[in-house]
Length: 282
Image (cartoon, rainbow, N blue to C red; front, side, top):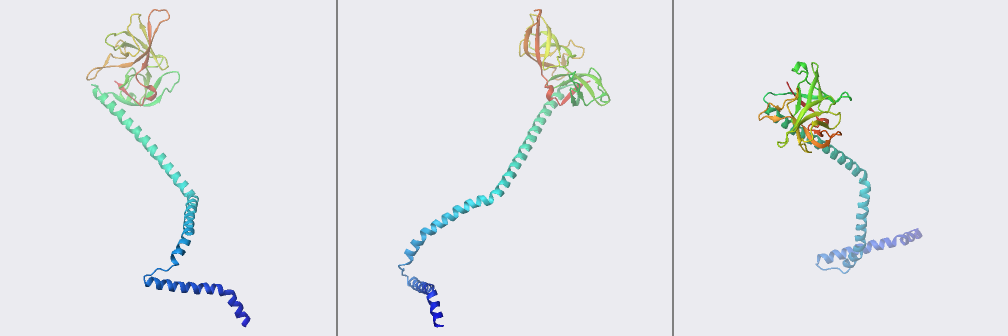
């Protein structure tokens, strides 16, 4: 038994000694603090422990920052996906708003144009554009029950669109200026010229203005309007004030092969590839 007590003492004496010293140091430190005196050991101990503690704190923060990015990686990716979707939604909404603003401006301009006409025209939506590839035509959303009949003039605020060729009860076919079967009397709007010719469709992008003699004063950039010499197209619109019916603008003037006259290539003023509504004069 004595050997066992000795063995236990030899085994635990360092711990027991440290605990006793710690308790004695604590009591002594408290007594010094109560008396307002500083002990000589606290400062060196703090200085010794401060440097390793600072290193451990910095290392912990560095590891925490890296580990935080790894732990939150999936969460951040999910947040980025959500933000990307929201940006796409906002861009789509902005595109819709811009389109609505452009549509509103276009309709406002159309309304101002219609108000200048003494007899209100019949507005029609474009249902189909060039349904037959052999002809330049469109289908309008007005027909015989609306009072539409063949040879009625079809216009836009920008100028001449064409004329009605056929009408059923609810829709009608409009022959465009660019159709190869379309032709109308035309003149140069410029006061110094007043040259007169005949505009024909080509089933292409441009019209040809023919029957111009060599002395005809026609230049690139000239505005071409109806001459009033055609059966279907008047010289001017019945508007306040009266206004010319614009056909297009001259892009190029060419000499005829036989040198008997000139031919002007005319770009229509109406953008047929973007047309959405037309106005029928009855």
